[in-house]
Structures are given as C-alpha cells and as structure tokens.
Image (cartoon, rainbow, N blue to C red; front, side, top):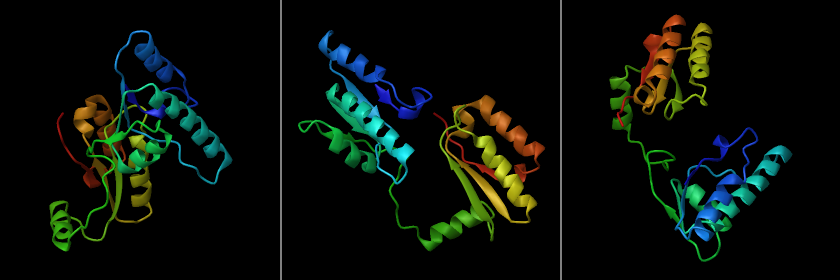
Length: 193
C-alpha cells in the first residue's frame, strides 16, 4: 500500500487503510507492506494542528501494526515513524528525488545555473513536484504575475515532471501564463517517466 494521508478524505483521516491491511494479513494470511510518503504526526503550537497530529498518529500506528514491511522516502519521516512503529519493526528509508537533504552548493554551480537560466538579480519563485489536480500551480503563476506588476524582477521555476505528469494540466498552466503575459519568465524543468 502507498500511504499519503491528505488523499484519503476531506478531514484527512480514515480507518480504511489499516482495516484493509489487517484483513489481508489476518484473514488472507498475506504479507503486507506500506510506503509512507507523508508524515503528519509532528506536534506544533496550534490546537487544530495537534488534533490532526494526534489522529494521524493513531491512524499511522494502526497501519504500521498491520504491516510486515514499512518504508518511507525521507529520513525525517523515518525518524518520526520509527517512534510509532511496534518495537520489533524497522522503518526502511528508500531515498528518492524528493525530500532531499541539504548539500553544499558551490559558487561555480550557482554561476552555471545563473548562465543557463539567464539570471541576474531576479527573485526566484519555485514550485516542486508533479502536476496534479489537488495542487494549485495556477496560484504560483498568478503570484508571479502580481509580483511582476509590482515592479519586482522575478522568475518562476516549475521543478518536477510537469509536462509529462499531466499534459492537460501543463497546457492549462502554460495558457494561463501566456494570458497573464508571464510565459517568458516561467521556467519548467523537463523529465519523462
């Protein structure tokens, strides 16, 4: 199972994933695994956020109890999930291109990127990840338009597989950028699945 909490329902909480895994394991004697891409159980200062964190922790604990193999894509998530996992289970870290830990950025690398994207003293706005209907990339284009209208030099970087993840959404986004006359300062990285 792939577990991304915010996709389940409006209130981001559902007992169904844990029940399905438990059923597969107990009734059907199947091995179960989970890949957790989000961890929403960190405590904050806000009451509402802490209520959600508590519910996420309950939900996540139930999922982890029902799984034979637990994986995540971020070291930070691994640390948080390990505190929720039953003591005999290890949370495995599988690195991916997201949630990358900071690295030293050399001056030459910076200069090369500035040349490649013709940057001088612009502010860089950025959005990351694949295009999907639940992410509002159009807001980033509108923010770029507003910033430019205020006389601030800026460019918007769309970093991820934008075009190949959803050609219809990418086309919609480019049409909006063209309509708002910001297409020249919008930079989209490209990759293919």
